[in-house]
Image 1 (cartoon, rainbow, N blue to C red):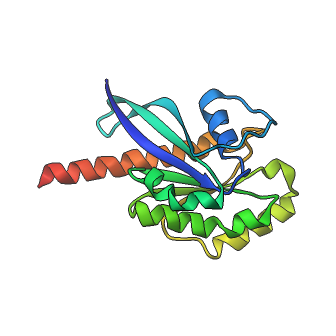
Image 2: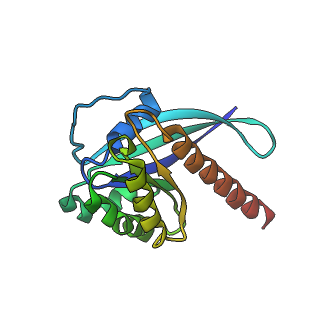
Length: 186
């Protein structure tokens, strides 16, 4: 069984729940305690997949949890290099984090032009469903073509966390397989 390694990044303002989403996905845990990420924290998770030939493949995800403070923006491109994809995260209870989603998406794409992106509207357990629908609808109006999917997530309840990461991983693997097959054909 072969193993490949892929880097993905979680990007967003401070306190949007990036660390909690990673912890829910990797460790199956949640904590209400807020711990600010300083710089970057890297988590690993190995996922077993089937490739195009129905062969088992181990995918080792290197999940980079990036600090969300604005002073970090100058060094962020260094941390973003080599990422196959990203989850851009906003806190639905803090509108300013939603307003900056496009800025985070553009930052990621400036470093990884072919990167795959999903958006997480996180902490949906803290807001009324009617308000959430308006927020998502408002963002979709200005959605960027490279955004593969938009998820309404909750690290606390685990709502859509696995689905979000799985969608990102599947597209990364699919895109990687296409690139490999086109190289072989040359």
